[in-house]
Length: 532
Figure 1 (cartoon, rainbow, N blue to C red):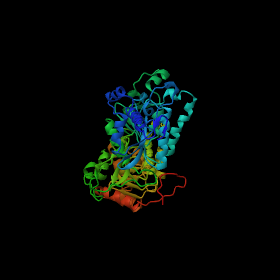
Figure 2 (spheres, rainbow, N blue to C red):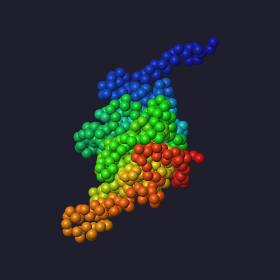
Figure 3 (cartoon, rainbow, N blue to C red):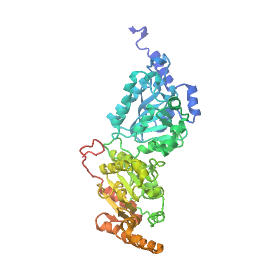
Figure 4 (cartoon, helix red, strand yellow):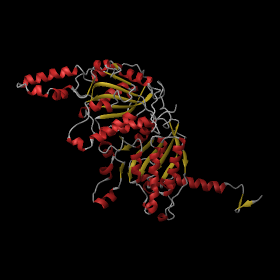
């Protein structure tokens, strides 16, 4: 029997033993002390997160035995170079996952780790599967990027942009992220943040202190409260890691694997799906929505009344609250809901509401998710303050998004839909597939009260008695209202039907059904249109 290297050719024991030791060392992450430190902060370890996110037994890891190549770190061992990469499954469907390990140099971005993630991005794009980042990272590793070689690191953002609208992208914020890792969520489709432990900012608090002299905590500068209620960068605030990962699974359940597929339909009675007939009457709507056009109510209750099982995943619920955006199902089919919220600013639109709605419409359109619009909008806010904020520019984003969307689009006018608010909420001229109104619906350039002030201003000014003038104002307003009621709109083919509010769910389902095979050609578009 011959031998090589001083050992028997069949003596695999030492080699297999060495491999096992290397794997065990890598799986230990940053070591027991750092693992315990991670848990003391209320956070799960990166591998515990993977276990919760993915279907059991589906994880295939790439680059487990990787180590750093940073000269400034010498022979120090960094398990997997602080970045765990691989492909697993969620609800039986493949998904690529890149997870930063905070127990290894605070999850900082090393050269080898970023090479692994770049390879994973390529896999996600070529295999057309969703990409999920689990973010818990201090950002760029200075030892690896302080030189001019830093310039090449920007490829990760360019590649992320190339993936946008092709495969779903989720950035789950599970810890503090600064600089490089803060741009990942900005370019992703969905960004949940864990309350109290996650944050994102272009500069960490130490850099901010040195650069501008501002002494703030990570939470004050970029915590979940900041980004879900003020900046609008994040989509949802969750209680802990477990809820965050469950929310990622739930979010992806609405989406196809890529932009050339239809969204997954959940059959009635399937696991986790309540049997909810599409023709179910929603008589509770009578008690939710007042007939008086100015009386406020909670549009969220309307949405939950008409969708399957009352189940809605609200997107950006804490930001721009005057408009609601959410993912739900009707008859098992995923839909994106855009709805005015009369409880906030009377449902009027401002710059943030326009931005929020536009981004959501673009997202749904990219992944073939039909859109449902629920109108109760007095129009855009007017005045010098909003003009200085660029209300025209921001409003145009929403107008653009709704105009170019090629997915099935259904509109329901509950009470009022005035002016440009009617247009951006998918009015008749915007390739709407089915527009219906309740008996309380009003479609007009403005409301009767506003119209009276403009049309009959001189007539009213000529009436000296205040009480008489007020009475005449009401009479004139009612005359105008008679010309904008839903039966006039239906008679002029500006509404496809006037419906009983209790039949709203059925009307939405019918509109989606007749438009299911809709085809709209956009020769300049690359993504979001189903193949013939």
